[in-house]
Length: 89
Image (cartoon, rainbow, N blue to C red):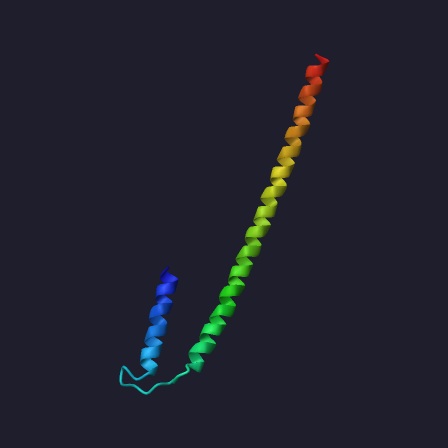
């Protein structure tokens, strides 16, 4: 939630600063074109990072599933050998 709070404060200060609350000349007057561009670029980078992390998690999950399959196959093979030995006895 820190991420959300930082953005709320950032946007609030940006809007207050650019509406003249601090007595300074607005560098990005309404409709805040520069702020829109910055937020759009941030959204592009954040979505890229999310997709990259999802791909990494999917690859890790596939490796775990493959390992589980191998362990299951080895277990089945060992059980089959044990049953064959039991049958022989």
